[in-house]
Length: 483
Image (cartoon, rainbow, N blue to C red; front, side):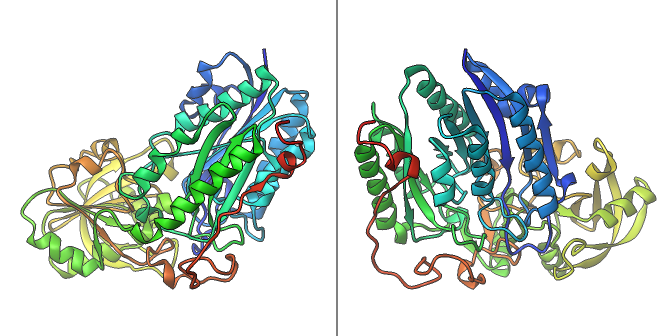
């Protein structure tokens, strides 16, 4: 039975966020806790001995503290070293980790794995399609698979695909390799949802390109809010025939480039005031308004009160604002108790450059969570209901609301910090509006500071043409054709 080490690091880091991720921001799985966790449920379908190492995952945010990253990597490598020899390594990654003071963290992590296990052990990775790849990443891997949906509803399927290819290689003796084509184009995820064209057709076309020697085809949108040299889109193909894999990758990249002018925001989108004007004229409910620039699942800080301030200025009645990360305000509510009236300062608790409001509110609900860091408070001020959280977190699932006694479908206006809506909230929206708000994941990407991305990358530089040229990994290029 093949013996496969499992682990990785998975988060998404905006270089425009002032916050550094710390150890408490990560959920770290080890040992049996990794194997039993729902995130790794896909492993149970395979007949193999999976050896758990460490998997660190965090809500997207700012760069990871160098000390935290080095501690996690060192522990991971120590655990891997202790279980050697293994037949293969399976890495559950994201692809958009930015470590403070370092470029290309995934290449550093995966490269360290390769150095430890040596050249003959196959290493497979799964990625988010909003990750960024590089020569260093590709050169250290044998197998690659990325999500094909955004919103991401195929995470288990993708990780299973990576594992299946690894086991196929071990059982058949075949030696797959990777080719990739960087594409000089970056898009915000909200303009490339696979629910909308052209992403829908581009991703649906991928499986038809696969066959006996082309094992997996992937299109990486990339992560635009990382100002790094590796920040581009890319086509990536895993296979055993370098020529066929290269042709497939070049075709994917060319089709993506040809469709570049078709990408657009899915919902009605515009400045905050324009979106609120539309919401005021709308008689259907619930209007769901996405506060896109402060979306914590994209790397936003999650503490801005821009939309709340605008609603107060309009004397808005009947809205739920969920939620704002503000530990001091949350703790003030717990100190006051349910039913209390108090004056609150809400917003800009993590990033002082953000928007803050002051209001008189009643504490409606207190949720203790598993620890003080997980506390939530629901307050009411006039016709506004505001959800406060002690830590950065999204409110994208219906259970996030019902846990607090709130009905997301029953309000006139629901404000969430999001880009495209989650699969649970999207069906409720009647309609869905997206506000182009300020924050660490500003959707107006032309305004982003651009210091390190490759020259000639759209939309930061002017570019009219692109010729797709496949680059095999060093491991793949070093073999004879067909080997």
